[in-house]
Image (cartoon, rainbow, N blue to C red):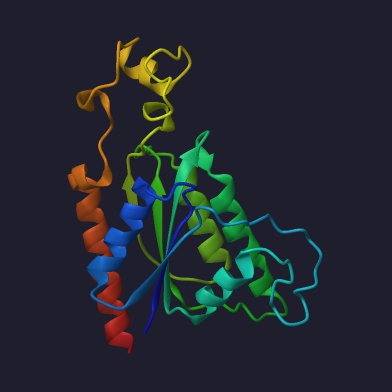
Length: 212
């Protein structure tokens, strides 16, 4: 029994990583975690070379991730919101699962899914809806979802305290310097989201054990 966690954040240290890990750890089962940070993953090219055997032929970092998806019993996928929608890296990763849907095969069918959205807990989360849509199109039952607040790069870019169009000034006004009290909460400080992740993770683990 294997659970695969995928964080689509482009940062090696991120709220997305932490949220996905929280779900995985709560399952009580063995898991593998993959960060897409530093990975080269392009969108689907529509070449249709995957139609014969349901395997993507594009030579980048995605096929290895696709094989991990196929080997997993459940997939926990998390992504941040960029411009109110799923970030490009996460979109490309999920888009490439189209290779698994040829000739009525649906290679991911029956694998349990959990969607994790880092989107300031917006009620109309396009991140959450897109992850759910891609899982459902692959005939994956969705066990649950997790929402958490993101951490804007404006706080660490070096110019956020004086950038008139950045999120720091939008929230706090112009600052002499960014102090700890100005910074948004990391995942470990978001009690409601931690509770969500724990509940969904425990549920996922229980379902997998019952079906083992």
